[in-house]
Amino acid sequence: MGGQNWTQGYEKQFKQVHGYDLISFLPLYAGRFVDSADTSDAVCWDIRRYNSHLMTENYFGYFTELC
Image 1 (tube, rainbow, N blue to C red):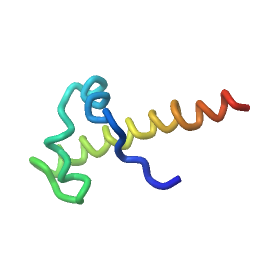
Image 2: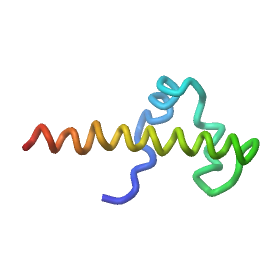
Image 3: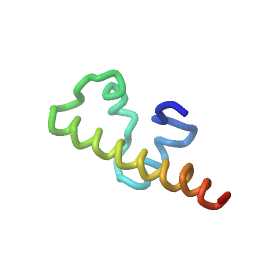
């Protein structure tokens, strides 16, 4: 399994949890700043934290059920 950064409906789920639209921050995935370094760092932190949550819930959690 490689890096997991996006899936169908991800942007809608992200907005529901974090309250802002991730689409305007897509340049971050190419390593570019959006707005400012502080804003970019904050959004990257939200993305990493949300991805970690999804991996824990949907990947490791599923394996726990199987065990």
